[in-house]
Length: 112
Length: 115
Image (cartoon, rainbow over all chains, first blue to last red; front, side):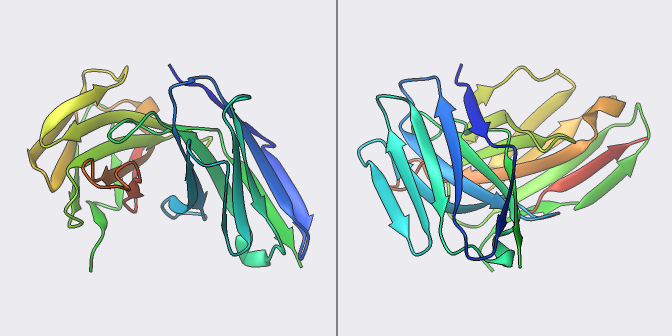
């Protein structure tokens, strides 16, 4: 089955700096790669996703890049703010209706 | 209010008991899922249903039995609860037939504590 590795497990940055979280996956049939943000005690919320026909996607301060050949994808957050502090999960999936295979999460702390 | 909802939000029970968690979505989705998040925050798929039919059943003890009475509901019944069942259980849904059909929306979670 799919194996998704996520690094780092914890990340601390100063407000205004950039944060980068990286994931690798094993199943070459995976073609959907979402990123979820989970605040303490809350549900995972989708923040951005990318499909295998695209190499990069950006939404304001958040961007995701995908390298299908190397089977890795990354989340980039620019101009970080304290409210960006949360646990971020990457995931990979084959297609609609398939389970999301999650990485183990990255706890991001943005200090003022 | 359009959403994926779950009840109860918290569930505290004794070992050996049987309990159910309910999930409802009013997004018009046709696929629903149960995920388990353990104490280390790891999220893992348990089950997936499409149009009331089971399509994913990961290696989950058969004490766990999902039931989908209709496309909008997916309930999780757990028999003979064990200490290791303590976790947060998340329901999610997606719409297979839509262009963004792989996007999954999560419910608020049910924190199960087995004493």
